[in-house]
Picture 1 (cartoon, rainbow, N blue to C red):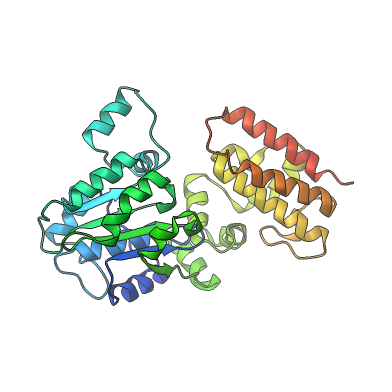
Picture 2: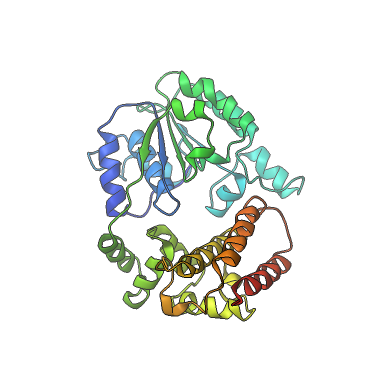
Length: 336
């Protein structure tokens, strides 16, 4: 599988790409909080490694290798990714996997399957067709279970030929220590507020939306872009949501996936806890928040939300799940 690098990199990612291209190493782990562009940087690094005529800025974008990457047909690139994520990105699956999903023999995996890791090992043992060797891209690397990760280990430590690896994740702590130790580590840079907001406006986020959504993101530009473009989250919707959910109305939750909805509830809970002890809120303006519950009640809700993260991807009924979260939020936000 491969994926096109069709859009220019954000300026802070471009700086990091140029720095990485000046460094040596056969395996890199790109990590940091979600929304900073780990996958985009990993993809750009992959393209530069495989490009027939790379520059200091990265891939040329016009050579035969770059065009093959754009067509998802580069023979020297192997991507390990959960099937459900690959499908959401429009990336092709191997014929056997696609047939199983089409025949409804199973659902698309949310983890990187061990079968895919075994195919990757076989891939690295074949002769590369281009002049630049082979590349394995793994994202998100934390979606490898122990069996998958252990299948990768020996090849990662002693890759045959000129094979290179790039792993990206927003949860590096979930990786096996043996995986982390075999990679050179790169923590992603957080852009300045001015740089990120300027870039977001260039991507089509209106000037009157940017400041509120940037606060909502906690400083993560990809979050702003995804929520605005994909989910239709606006500044007004975000600012008005705390008072809506305090009345028992889901509001924002109706637009988001379960994992994103739960993350937003955690942000709201965080700000309520902060205000309850006299600290400023981080994700909302003070005037957006309803009357604050006690610190004890907010802390109890925070613990419950944390527990929910362990099961958020289970196939629950989405409507019933949202209703349950809304009811619990209303109770938690009720003033003492």
